[in-house]
Image (tube, rainbow, N blue to C red; front, side):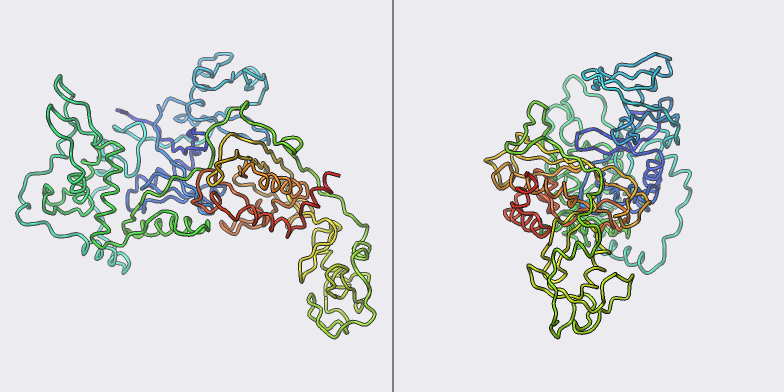
Length: 623
């Protein structure tokens, strides 16, 4: 328990099981919503304070960070630190990553480094707290104790994290547990403002009033509930330790039954006192419910949450289950989450059902367990520069794929929609060919104005390839505009759901943010790269290795990613997938990007074929 003041740091749990701090500005933003209480609706949009976090929303009811474009949920927590430590002084310690950007240390690590810095020590060994690194303050470097690799570190000043006073637990959830801080806030707030009279709020209150049954007369004058009496006394010689409800019991006292817990939940939910629930004085129901919740541990709170859902459903109050809906589209969990947030903001209760656990990553794997893939050379590939053009001019490129048509058919050119017997209707920059010249593509035999084909080529990637606009047949080697990055691949000793008889191929894509080149939508403008490194998974089967080899060809041809506008977040100038679907969920399929999926390998082979990549392509690349 914290008995005086403390700074609040909001943190999220990453895939490696480490709690990572939000920035001071984001923590202030979240803390403001917490202090506002239920009036804030229980959700926090992080993009309002940091545009890099635009896809993320925090649901304070379930204490989860929700990513709108993928439906990914990650736990968050509200942690407390000494005001005299680094976060209380606005000091942030960071290390330089491989992309040249700066990454903050975990909060406990940063506090340890700052403490040694203030003591004017020449260096600090982080091994005692689980990090095999030494920080040298003389050179401001981080040294790996095993490899001796060095990275730069820096100390910078930022905002001070939000300060709170009063008693609070080490890590809390929303709404905050009652204590001195809550009491002070309530006293400072003064009398409550009159309720809003807009039609929406009136409707919400009428729904809640209709759902809450009136208290029986026999209980209206009963004693206050026992839950407001405060915490139980310390355990004596004959007492038993607290049970799963968090309440200590004396000798021979049975644990509360699940039926009793459900009755307690019913009291807390409705604010009234139905039969079997202890009544409270007028106006004390909310305080009594909060005090009762404060005495319960995590397990009991989970039981109460489930019981609360049952009570709400039984009473007819509109509820929204925040879980993955039927189907495999990633829109479904996002739709459920957004709907739940909107319901919460409107004041309506949200039924937080317990979905199957999302498993994005495999269990930790040591370096010795990671194996190279038989038949595939190396374990990584890099892309750097734009591939060279295959022809000097568009006319020379198209000449390889076209046959002249002396007597054009009396039909439309599907590019300019003018008759082939008439000149091209294209009105852009003038190619050097005659507007009435007609050509036929050699393999698919579709006929177009050569003038139109040259204009189409000039508006594309200009990589020496051409794709028929009618049937999508590819002539030459199609390449893309994927920005520079790295693709790693190896075998890990775990099986994917639906593939129990083989190990797993893990692919790791890493693309840093940068500046767009001449082949990109906005040359010279910066682009973002969200969610990297991205981990993807294939079964280590014959077909899985075949898919990997073709993905390597697609990577070399810069076809896996592109720069554009995200269809889920609406962010422009960002790295997006380029029509070749990947499985990014290791042990489940809640987002639709996981396993089991019996048709995935065949589907991705078809998507690769649409990009002009087949087994013949892999053989040509090898040659």
